[in-house]
Image (tube, rainbow, N blue to C red; front, top):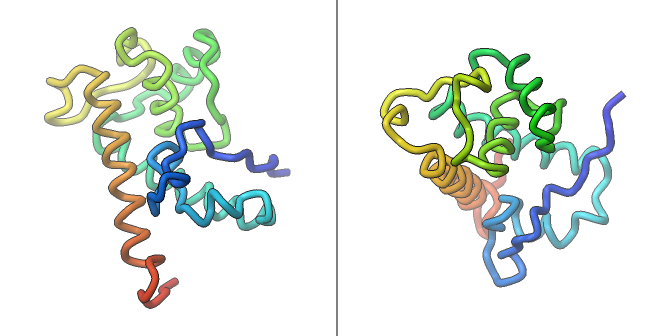
Length: 151
């Protein structure tokens, strides 16, 4: 049985300031406003879109070599994460909890390409920026007023 979808809110809402996409949780402004009125199916659809975007962005920078090691370390370090999500999403939770203190190899991770030369704090910021940019691009392409809605 699927567990109830919790709000993706991270307490840093920019939708209330007029942004079409919240810089905190990456939901669209109407999704932030209407969240409590949505059915579980609607919430799950939003959560799946956000997870897909985050997974894609993280995977471009960090490979999960050993997801069991990552899961074990996340529990050992008492880092909150959703075990139902893809392990790449766990990585973002890990980086938010303390990127400056993480040794990737101890968590079953490997930095990819040009990211091998970057500090994890910088990678965390790049992931957040790319995640936001992907959400904005999707909004502009498929949601923005006057645009044709496509499946």
